[in-house]
Image 1 (tube, rainbow, N blue to C red):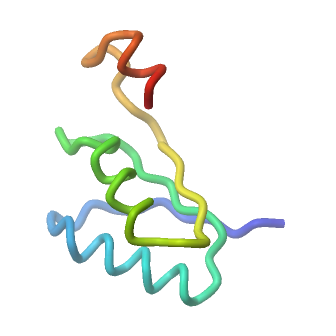
Image 2 (tube, rainbow, N blue to C red; image 1 turned 90 degrees about the vertical axis):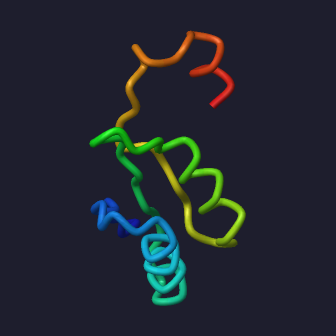
Amino acid sequence: MKISMMINYSGDFHADVQKVCDLENAGLDLVWVPEAYSFDAVSQLGYLAAKTSKIEIGTGIINVYSRTATCVAQT
């Protein structure tokens, strides 16, 4: 069984990244990054991937209507 959680937007991008790094060090398996309130989940996912090494990351949901099909496929 894997343990996961969703990031809640605090309004501070770097604080959220630090929180995920702390959760990774505590042994969390997976974190979900939803796209809401006009935040770009794809950018945050990329940054989290660069700053973490073991934790899995995934989109909770992304707005497919704001991107082309090609852009979504590349994500």
